[in-house]
Image (cartoon, rainbow, N blue to C red):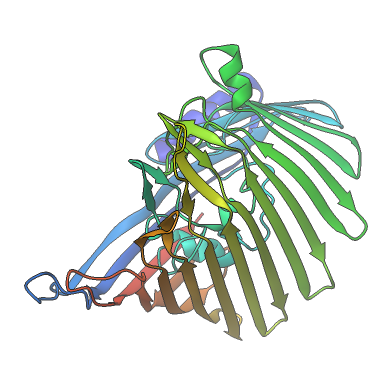
Length: 402
């Protein structure tokens, strides 16, 4: 650490760029107990488990020139991320690089990472995108994986997954035009297939944004293991701060049709809502979304379409500030997938899952903290004996930033 800071100081002296901040974070999580009531074919449950992981070991630095028109940021967390920017005028900013998947110009309010916020980084809560993570609701269609149902289907999480040339243009205070062109390193047409473009309106009553997020040049797995579609998605977002205590987020996602090998996918339409109410002593967040009207079929005459099941997610998170440094959260939610059919033939039963996840935070949301929680959840699937089952865990975590 000391050597790295010394190197940064030398670079600053040589280049004339004064790094304003060097920061970092370490998050360690210990699972004091893990287990499941699922039984195998021999009618036995697995042994209770325990374990842990270092969820984050990160260092970051950023800085600008004295004039404030050039700057840079980087992060090292097992691999390097970074970007450099230039602001030739107040209304125009140019950027090259990425911010390590945090995303630029996201329009999701409290519906994705903002639901659990920093707790989701520790693993004491369930995942940031949805309470179920990204695997429980995977559906196999023709050998390809349909991405798990989550709130990214209805809300744009921001651009930041790979290096890109980015333009942010604000000709007036209420209007922003944001464009990202990734490093395609290939054909020009592949670059523009992956373009992300956004029109952002900040009006007196709230925020309205329309975003087109391009797909990958080819249908391949993305960094989370989901299919990176070779078709784009159009998002509409409405964010309304109703008063000082209450806010509303509304999102709509429409994914364009795409093809993998000889399978044509009509992607579902997704609609979602997020609500937040907060006072000094109490708060509650609610998010809900539905996904419907999707299908898949072979690209041959007379092929029967396989309907992608309608899916619903609902999560609620009340929290209570017991003192300036102690907060209790109680997360609960359900997830539902309808029957999986090909025409009139049922391929799989409907799926209903649920979770409950009480948590204690000692510390502050954006500062150092200790966390303890209990996770109890049913993924909605059956064990080897065709019975419902639940999983459980007791995670502990320490998160420190500097």
